[in-house]
Amino acid sequence: MLIIRNCNLINMAGIYEEKKDLVVENGKILDICDNAVSKYNVGHVSIDACGHYVTPGFVEPHCQLGVREQVFRFEGDDSDESTDPILPQLRALDAINPADEGFQMALAGGVTTAVTCPGDANLIGGTCAAIKTSGKTVSEMTMVPELAFHMCLTDDVRTTYSSKRAPKTRLASAALIREALMKAKNYHTLWKLSEADPSRKAPKFDMKLHSLMRVFDGMPVKITAKRSHDMTTAIRIAEEFELNYILEDCTESWLIPDILKKHQVNCVVGPSYGQKSNESRYRDPIVGSVLEEHGITFASSTAHPRMNIELAAIHLTLMYKKGLTAMAALESATINAARFCGLDQRVGSLEPGKDADIVIWDGYPLDYYSSASTVLIEGKVVYQK
Image (cartoon, rainbow, N blue to C red; front, side):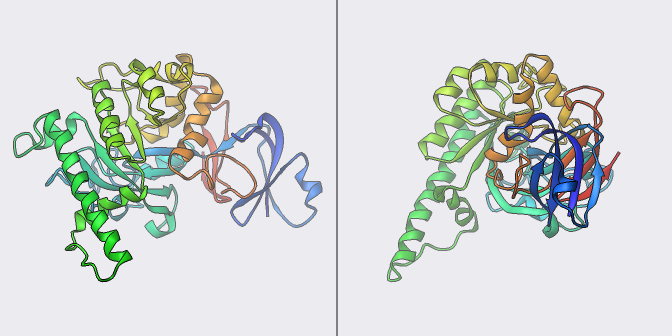
């Protein structure tokens, strides 16, 4: 048993800046109480938080952690298989390098869970994996091997293929995604009919379609789009095929909040700061406050390595400084991110029964000068400043 004493606790489940003790057993939160040492009068290990802020570990909902390095000094970039714009059979899981220095950056930034994805070079790039940010092997780190599909409607795809093959335009980008989904839907129908009736012949096995057809069983789809008109295209396609979808990046989401609210879109926002390009010229940390003002729940992302994952709290702070409330900022990196990824039964808040992924900060998490001083994953200390 582990007791973390004297926490100034923000547990993202109703406790905000209250002095509490956390009790951990077998990697899970066992209890949150006022005086755990006297309540649990048995042998235990103790950590004194010394009155510092304690939060759940951050959840990074979209990145290339372990698949693409911050700087290409070692393994380099395995995130983009730029040989075909439609590659739903790929899995980010198969490219994760546990030795990527990004994992240490994640821990230093208080990030304990990450959804790592294929890159943005393909219209349909394969599946994303949910992982913990500490471990020696991929199997040890993996929470969900294939959490969601990744699709992309950005300039990255068109610049990758424009000199070789389609898509050269937004016209072709949308058409190729539609074509793939139509084929997968037909394949899904025939496959399910053959399963229900053995006398019916199953369609000829197709790796691409067999993988992609899972979207018609409800498997989530993460669609990266920056420009407002690309976001509306993503909504149009997703609703046409009744996909369980989330919009990612959402650079211009603050320009179309009414549309996002009308369609009840879940948005993963970020990074909202950094180098600007034609697609990201309206990038601004004001995005958080605008979405909050319109009642739109969102999650925050660094999209590592586009923004160093170690700066996850700084990303929140930038939006906080532009008018986002403190609670909404913290929710966007914890419980909202976990909920959007279907991981909220395990992570995103500190509650009995959930994973003991805990961060002790050396100051207020939304202060530029604060940082994670101690990080635990499933009750084990994995990082100390």
